[in-house]
Image 1: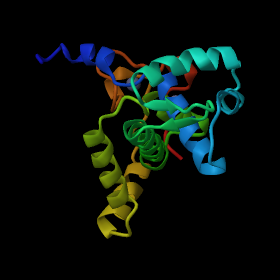
Image 2: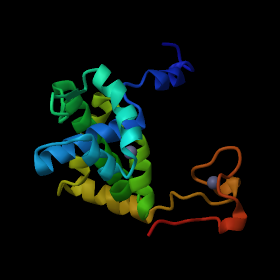
Image 3: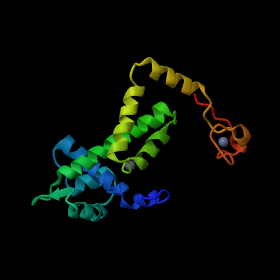
Image 4: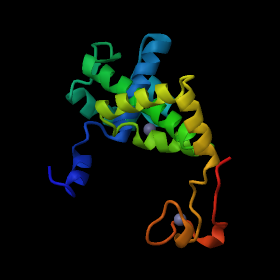
Length: 182
Ligand SMILES: [Zn+2]
Ligand SMILES: [Zn+2]
């Protein structure tokens, strides 16, 4: 693939965001109570049974979700693998955004949720490896986090003095400009 063409990869993503949440919900239900029916999934996701059934169809067709004769749902090995990958992605991206970049409050959780189904296994494992290094008790890691927290890496609201923006500041000066990290 040529540079500049990579955005088209987004369309070939193996899971939609909602499909990822269906798989994770089924996995959680199976772990918590040992079974998952359409009713249980609909309740967990706060949607109607009808729309739940419709959304499950393509997942059954792709054999990620398997329904037995009594309408109990299971994940296939591939469905379970994808659910685990998305869960892992969510966990590492949220930890990276919050603990390394200092993204505050719910924003780290919201952004991680949006990205979780898009990361490849390779990127996910590298990010997890980076995090486990950064969270280790190594002096280099501790110094790095300390130095990063003390450096102003926010938008200055004035492009001539901004460490992050290039052509114009993404945060208008009216909104307070510099946002040093806590
Ligand atoms: Zn999500
Ligand atoms: Zn800026």
